[in-house]
Image (cartoon, rainbow, N blue to C red):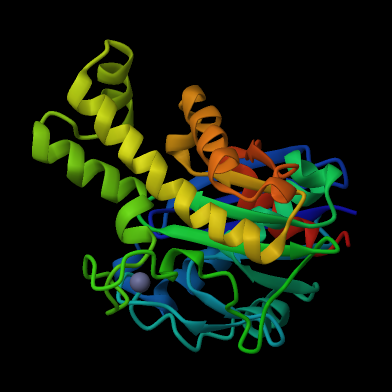
Length: 292
Ligand SMILES: [Zn+2]
């Protein structure tokens, strides 16, 4: 079976055809131009899919909250105006006359890891991505646990600091306000404006910059605190962690060490692993929706 995987992100959209082995052919990337809004994006997706031939199904990974039952966008914030309510599955099925499945980007990435990546040796695991915010997915028996409205796994909005920093969601003290990459950047920039990305921060860390060292340690502690709560709730065999910042080799080890120190003894078998599919996880996971 040949599946066209499409990953619609806030900045870029990615296209590629894959098979059961997860080998991607005809990979292409284009700017999403998300500010132009939902109807524009959907038309752009249709135009770009028209350049591909010879596929049996389409799997879509997209930013925003997805209603998996009808493949529509349940909610998208102002980063993609007028995307809420778009009936992606219905529109694309009518246009291309092949089965279409739609999943939220974090869930799709988790499924990608489960089918083609590090998660393939686990039936159950938690998946978290650390970036601008913190995305989460719950994989149970190799399926996403969706919850009542299809939006379970919003780990970024666990409150880890009562009355803490104001979060984008309107609450105070959410996990992502302390443990996201954005949170790390803000703290580093308070020390020196030159710390504009993870690479520069970790370069300073490798040169034993003490201030940066303590900022990174504090941030790792914030990451670990959230993971400890999740591991105590789910008792998963593994937690798989993604996001560009996790490419810093030292991080997974530091996080794992702190988590294992903080959790109850009987939970210590949990494995903390780095995601392996990088920015192809969403595309591959969307394709895997047709392989299960
Ligand atoms: Zn929040």
